[in-house]
Figure 1 (tube, rainbow, N blue to C red):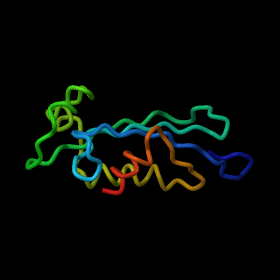
Figure 2 (cartoon, rainbow, N blue to C red; figure 1 turned 180 degrees about the vertical axis):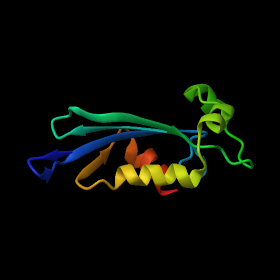
Figure 3 (cartoon, helix red, strand yellow; figure 1 turned 90 degrees about the vertical axis):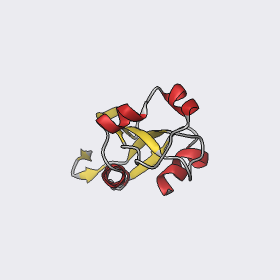
Figure 4 (tube, rainbow, N blue to C red; figure 1 turned 135 degrees about the vertical axis):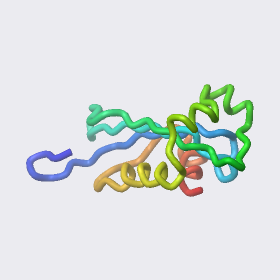
Length: 114
């Protein structure tokens, strides 16, 4: 992300898959992101990681059908919520990053805050 000794601006496109439709009450299952330069050329590798569901949380069956991510898959591939959030935080806090995606204001940003 360096250009002539200066850090260049980047875009981080991201999306959550969740185990329900309510961003404040339901839990994330997966996070994916890709970073581009200011001309939308992909830089770096895509990021895809999973969050283990809590033992006391029951996912909505409809969400599992839509995303195709089962609680068993998220448990097998995922990490605990604190580690999951820390990875997202490290992507979001890279200097000169503009974070964006589809339906972020109504959904994904709310998932991030909760």
